[in-house]
Length: 149
Image (spheres, rainbow, N blue to C red):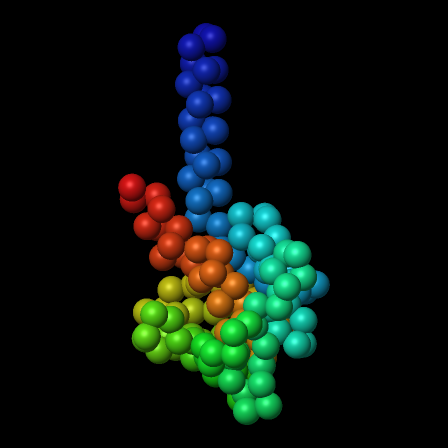
């Protein structure tokens, strides 16, 4: 009987770690950029900040997403439904879905994969949040690469 209980407990613990690995990064209603229940940044109308409060990105007057060095790294959405982020010399396109009853929107990449959940209040700064996730190696494709090793 003890052996069966031990097996059940081990199976339960293993299943929890599998679910934890599939956690989707998110920006909550307070602007916290989160990954695996840890705050990795903060969104404000001015852009994104690291946990210490240092500016990571901002939106300029032309709707460009600009990093802390002044480099244009994306284009903020005009319509609130899509945006572009420049990563490693490539242009990545993202779509922001409609908000559900809690105000959360799914952000998908060009392949239709959910890369982030975003509160409706921060649609204009979505590319800033993507930059924070890339900088912290929290994009879903980064997560998959880490677990393949």
